[in-house]
Image (cartoon, rainbow, N blue to C red; front, side, top):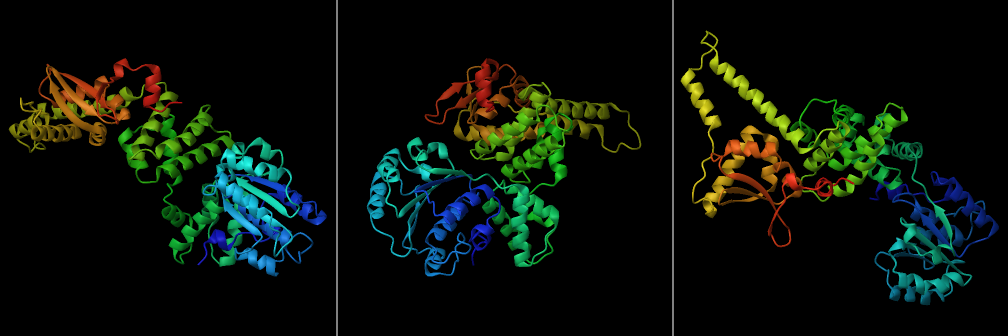
Length: 502
């Protein structure tokens, strides 16, 4: 069974949605028989480059064109093209046929006259992937081609195509589809498939399509397959696509502007429910809506650009929800003129301090009918909670070291869940050397958080040896050698690198 984007791929010029200028120029060329020997179709993925190339190639060789421009799709030549076995319409993927030998083979085949149609049409997809030598090998052919040959280059990166090729070609830019154009295509598919979908779902799918017909149709197909005959509303669509509702996006938007009163733990819990890349996309779309309504903050535009760039970086993280939480908190603290690590950690420490004060005030109250816990039992519980980890002389023994690391993590977890998550994901080893307790960290982002004074104080609260200095060190990836990098001696440039600040 063909996918939706294959099933509903345009088969003639009248079925192409949008790109009116490009269509009109190509139609006029067909009507007047003024055919160029080389065309370049440039646009993002799913913009329609390959579809338009195939329609144009089919029209060039059609034996009975409709209105002198549309392929009939019923003659021998059109049928061969639709089935993908036309001897004179050759599609090449430049990503896998990019070398000079491939270009030379192509040059040799060009000399052969067409066998079924009037023209031999070469559709070269991902043309920017061809090597410079391959382009040079084709240059003379493109400059003075045989009359029966037409080249069509499709590319997402026209700047990588040599200017010598561009200057000898007709270049057409295929812009991204508008929301209205995508809606037209989605509604056409739904009507053809006899399926009902509410307007909110259609709007959401078209927004997530990012101007790409193919991406939009793929998202629509995913919803239709999993809905399994249900009446499709916005809730079903959100659940299938894993899209957060607008309330979550609004809460995060308030957070980055310092208007939401919750800590990073809660932020991570929000983010972890959804795909981080989709969440970024939804935040950016929300900000764009604010900009359109003229209800945005002055720094919303720079925030959107920063998050769009961060989409590429987030793919490199094992735990993208934590990386995104850091990025959003970094933006928030920049918007509110507060520091990054100290603000986050101090808030957690402050909350813990408040809890401790409350516990102390309860323990000092006189006995009453409402208090049923004996004071000695409360003291034991408090003592157990505040009990510190003792360091032993054999701590550098592997078995003892593993136990110590586990014990420290458990203790930190009771005091600060945020720091516990950092240790859990980044702590590689612990060493006791002279008067130093050295935490060996394998992640630069965790390094900066754990190196802050508040973090070190909290670690000291967990370890019963205040005479020893806590030091945080980074293990490099290549040779695992230890490099000392504490937050106190980081330069502004280094801090920028740690947090990926452009």
